[in-house]
Every structure is written in C-alpha cells, then in structure tokens.
Length: 326
Length: 307
Image: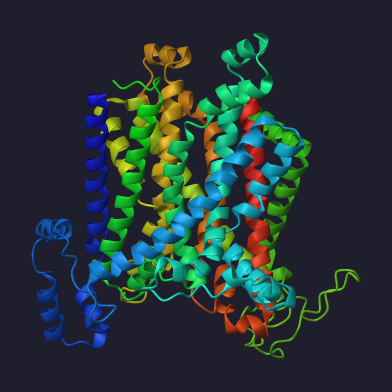
C-alpha cells in the first residue's frame, strides 16, 4: 500500500511538473513579443516595449523565468492582471473558481445519479429496447456540442417558456437570467445555476452512462453471477448485492475523469450563459493576451483535475481489495 | 501478398458496411455523413449563391422553405441581417469543418500510430519516458490547450507571406493534430504491446527482418482495426471541437461561412430579429455531430465483432 501511494504521489508531482513546463514554455517560446502586444502592437515605441519587458521580467533567461514564476505561484503571488485593471490575479481566479465550483457541484449532483441509473438500466437490458433507446439518447441529443444545447435551453426553454402564462403562474423562478454578479452568494446565485448546470449534465450523461453500462455488462458475464443464480439466490438480490457493487466501483474513477471533461464543457457553457466563472475568465484573458492570468487559470484547472484523479485512484485502491498494490 | 492484403481490406470493408446496414441507426448516421461530405466537396456547385458574402439580397427575409410542399423558394433558410443567403452559407460551411476535422484526424492518426507502434515495439526506457510524458500532457484538457495555443498564435503579428503566417492561417488544423497525436499514440502502443508477443512477430524476428519491416509489415496490419475505431472516434471529437472553437470565436474569422461562427454571430439580440440565421447552422452542427457519432459507434461495433 505504502509503495502504491508513493508511486502514485510521484506520478502526481511528475505530471504537475510536465504540465506546468508545457504551459509556461508554450506561452514563452511561441514567436512574437508579448511585451509589444501589451504595449499596443506595431505603433508602440521601443522604449515602451523595453519598459514593459523589464516590468514583466522577460529579460531573464527562460529557465530563470520559469523558476521565478513557479516559486511565486507556489507562494501564492500570482501577479497583477493586465486585462482587468487594478485586480490581483489570485483574487480574481479564486472568486471565479468558487463560481465554477458551484456550477460544477450542481451539475455533478444532477448528472451522476441520473447517468448511473441510465447506465445500469442499459446494462441490465443489453441490446433490448431500453438499452437501444438509452444508447440512441446518449449518442444523439446528449452528445451535442454544449453551445447548441445551451442556446436551445436559453432561447426555447428559458425565454419562450419563461414568458408564457403557465410558466409564470407556476413560478419558474429558477429560469431567471444566468448572468449573476461575480461576487454573489450561493443562495443568490442558485436561480442562475440550474440551466447551465443542466447543460453541463448533458455533457457528462453520455460519458458516465456508457461506461457504467459497459461495467454492468462485463460483471453480468462473470462466473460468480451464474453460481449465485444457480444457488437459488433471487435475481434481484444477485443484481443489488453482487453485480452493482462490483460494477459501480470503477465509477469512482469515471467521475474523476469526467471532472476533466466537465472543465472543458464549462468553458463553453459559461461563455454561452454569460456565467462569471473560470472558463469565461480564461477566454477573456486569452483574448487580451494576459499571460500570467492565463498561466494561473490553467494551473488551477490542472491542479483540480490532478487532485480529483489522485483521490479517485487512492479511494479505488482502498475500496477494492483486488487492486494490485505492488 | 499484395492482393491478399487488398482482398482482406475489401472483406473488412464489406463486413463493416453490412453491419452498418443491419443497425438502422448506424446506417442513417453513415448516410447523413456521406450527404454532408457531398455538400463539403461540391458546396460551390450546389449553393444557389456561391459567394458566401453576397449581400445583394433583401435584409432579414424569412425562410421560404416549405417542407410539406417540397419547395425551396428563393431563400430556403432566409437571409441574415446583412442580406446574405443563409442556405448558401450553410452549404458552403460544410467544406471547412470537414477539411479541418478530416485532415486533423488523418495527420494525428498517421503520426500518432507511427509513434505508438514504435514505442510499443521498442519498449524499455524509450517507451517509459514518452509514455509518462504523454500521460502527463493529457492531464491538461484538450479544449483549454487549444484555446491557449490558438489565442496566442493568432494574436501575433506576422509578415504576410512568411511561413509563420501560413502556419498561423492553419492554426486550428495544427492544434487539432498536435492534441490528438498523443491520444492516438497511446491506443496504438497498447495494441502493439498485445500483438508483439504473437508467434508471427517472433518468427519475423528470428528470420532477421529489419525493425521497420516488422513494425509496418507484421504488426501494423493487426493494429489497423483498433486504429480505424480510434480514427472514427477522433473524427467525431474533431468535428465537435472545430464547431466549438468556431463558436467561441477561436475558429474561422468573420465573414467566413463557418457554422459555429454563424451561430455566435446571430445569438443574443440578433436572435429575436433573425432566429433562422442561428437555427439552421446550429441544426447543421447538431445533425452532423449526431450522424458522426452514430457512424463511429457502428464502426466500433463492426470492428469489435469482426476481431
């Protein structure tokens, strides 16, 4: 166990190092002078460009720049933004991260139980009508790009239905605008969360339910299932006590992986819904070429994903005695 | 030898085709993909107004499409706020999404499988190091990396006509290829690890064949089925990614008839004025994504049954 944990942690740090190096050098090695872009393109005078280079520490050697940045990042000094005047990168990223985390939490709460149920049903009815219907659903409606479903939800569901008399009398309060202020409390933001969270749910639904289905089908074919059935245990009990227990264990890993899917999905969803999260901040930061802010956002995202994967692996190893820990 | 390979490939193709037809949803998906492919190839001949930026039409005309009466009318999908024919723009937009997603898939599958075959066959520390780096790189979500790369490259000033400018013009193609090479390599590698322990590989090694011969003539044919599945999966992700990037404003620049871009240009307040200018390109994206998914699901099923 100790050996497994040590290897897992080593890989965690290695991955962290590689991804931080990748992001850092991609942003620096690319041809072109970021200082000139910040100073205002071709019209900027050489003096202005030189001054900005100096301020950003772009004159040091690349490895030195990386080290400075990495140490500052670990110490929590993420620099000032260029894109959003007067704000500190860390405060900005933290505020937006909290919003994205709220959205992700609501989305996970909606999608995980739903997709597990659909996956189990599809697996138990392999190649019969419920399975065909569910796989058709997950391959079609649910797998559409987030912006298509997002715009459909906004324009058809929220705007058209929200205005109808029936919806008004039912009090569709949760279909209010999703453009919440960035520093709203959770209760204030909740009405704005439902619709984007539903769009994010669709992103993960297809993925989790298909993997769950595969797990259930694989487990049903095992010898112990036949043994249990032949021993005369009720089929219902075989399913609940044996099959689902084993088939749902890998789901822990699946949920961890789908968090990284969720991250990509949220970028698009936040942009469509005008939601003040990390994804929409990233797009703004890239458009304004704010290198430090982009680096900070990507590193925070990678941290979340790596931690989710690490936790899932450790939890899986602890819960599943069959995992080889050597 | 050659004719044997050809006839085997033909047999596999026919098997896949028959299996697609046996599952109606895969058949529908494949037919729709072929339909969009025809639009992509012959768009300029099929569109009533081959110039996507022809603004000579009346502004904000409603769609004249009459499905019941089987009539297209003058502007089947209406015109947008600049007086451009939406029907022609949707037809012309098929070309770019197919070109970028298709070429990106092709490049990443060719380079990725070469890398994966080499890693898997070579084994040892080469495989260990490249494999670990690939695993680490895949921790960064593809869309994030694509956005960062495209955003930075596109903001750079290049002298017109230089090689950097040519590269920057095809930045999405470049980024998609780069993103998918490691993923394909990982699949090719794991299949190669499986194959390389078989007797026929050992026999070739004992015969003293070169490494190049063993990798490409002995191992590659057995890896192809899983590469075909991976390629169809990559293609469906690439279509998805190109459409999303276009929508986010990181794809084709206005006034290109890019579907994602058209959706983005016509949302918000413009949606109230010309809903059709958003709905038809969005519908085209939706149908294409679903069709490619159904097709690749069918290919996966056929290949897995065949092996």
